[in-house]
Image 1 (cartoon, rainbow, N blue to C red):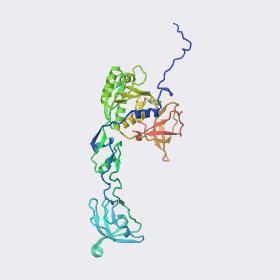
Image 2: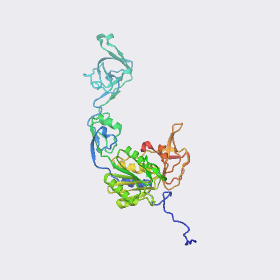
Image 3: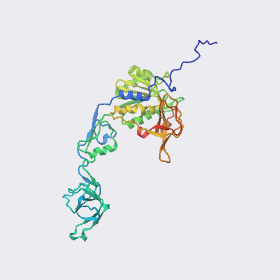
Image 4: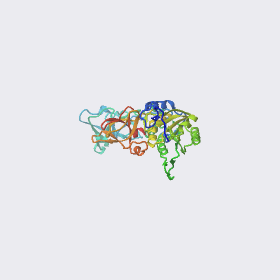
Length: 436
């Protein structure tokens, strides 16, 4: 059998693929992020919750202080409340101890010249006093040795008016905005709110997020693995990342590579969730149906990014729900979630904009890269002998090597126009503690 070739047909025209470093149809990372942020809006519904239940929730309204904190001028030390005018510029002075002020039990009276009141931390400052001398800087003289039996205290020089005193409203003032709407309530915030006597706060309702994996090759934990099959790790990564955001989770399991099954899953997810996240099926394989199915039920704003790993990422809408179609590779799921999905979900939760923490540190190893795509390599931050920080990669950076994320504590971010860096060069890193 002979084959004939037409002129110019000695080469196969290649379509753009996820292996290409430059694709004119791929969106740059900053552009994609900006488009997503513009496309999503915060949920509007809110609810009143008890103080302890507010931890991790997003405030729907400003919290305004109803009182001064502290409510009274009080002592910051255990010691003696005195009049600064009675204190010496040189030598010592001996003052009569006329009473004791305890936290929660103020001394009833007005301090006169030549007098001192023993005072405990947090106790209301007696009227007439304007200085507290800590007890370690005094000498107490027992009253049994003095005429009239009254205790005295001897104080030296070096003290001034206002020392060791907390002013009323020094922490928070009546009418002051304590916590602004859009803040995610932190553990210390609970203490601040409790100090105001606030028992309940208004928070945004929890965001509802549905997620599922796609692929006939996926198996659940506990099932035997046939040839070519893998355990579904992506749903567990998504579960962990979403749980830390505090959203309401709707885990829809694994959906097989079938148009009808995908359509049914998309409809069900869109009917009950604010956001829908899938992993797998957004590439160009014959069994990758997510993109086509989404187009038939909703819309796609874009589906290719100039990044590595994670180029095939579909973003759009399913009815009223926002849709994220993440790649199937395990590392790509984690990277695209933190770079695009998490910022969008935070905005939908009503949170104020949160910029990821970045550091500029030297790399301890050469990092290979070709220009064209922003890369998020996995790294480990290390403290050097001189106390400065540096970063090294976790090893093989393949998008299927999920252990590279598990071993890492940061992303090493290499700009799209970078052609790699040498050991000792400065790179940008996103620490997981600031990002996650």
